[in-house]
Length: 360
Image 1 (spheres, rainbow, N blue to C red):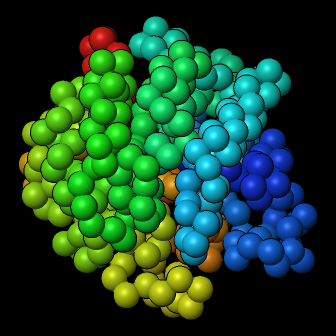
Image 2: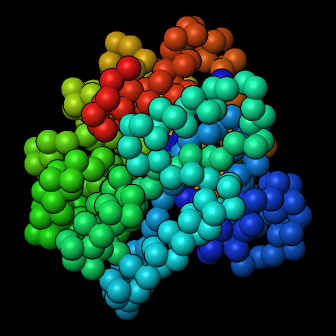
């Protein structure tokens, strides 16, 4: 079954982890098996062949570069200009993948419908099809000023989350408190003029409430789970979930172990020992479905290889292609074929077509 994954940090992995994502995951792991510079070396789960193997034909692919004060303990760049340059390098990688036929950028409803038709054509082998990508900016720090939002929209940026971790030029993010900055308020207003998709992921509770009031355009939560099940600020409260449902939003379930089960300690706990499987993600899906009364607001936003690998992912997965296992697991939990299609692709597809002025 065709899958849309709404959050993958592909270019970051390609450039900062120096991974040739045209290769099989097994080959990337083999190359990295003796490396120790990063915690997930030899444990990556994502590459373009694995996406095709898993029939994950469309992804929301990120650019990301944080601005940090020189005294900050968070990784990042010491000027917005440096952060902008970093995102442009990431964008250049996506363009190189397009030039080699590996990927294709999707920016409007016509291109989206054409791409879905290609992936639904069973006469063409999946391994020959380009992986479609919708370009998203995770954290807005790299926008030197608001004119750079317009520049970004012109080259195809269609979704943006104002915050990431820690302090931000436009909004504080995960682990912080407080509202949007003054520049963040102006950013949200400018996004509204461009009808961009606003991603509430990583916002503080105050900033979440603020953007819901300010923003009139399409809103989603690309990679989020439930605070009732895992009580961290990074997760959505039940009230936030209700608000997103009222806004016809879709929430992408994320596969980072610390967001699946409470008490997870990075670098210490083991997914198998803690029994973290894809079924645990379905617990979060169930919770959202109970609030919504249907399956129309949940989907996949895996965040796999988002600065973690097998050591912090469900242990019943070997690569991202194993997202297909969700089909059987969801059926065992009572989800209908229609429900499963909603989760795999239809919810994201409906959202995107509506956001871009089309309906199905």
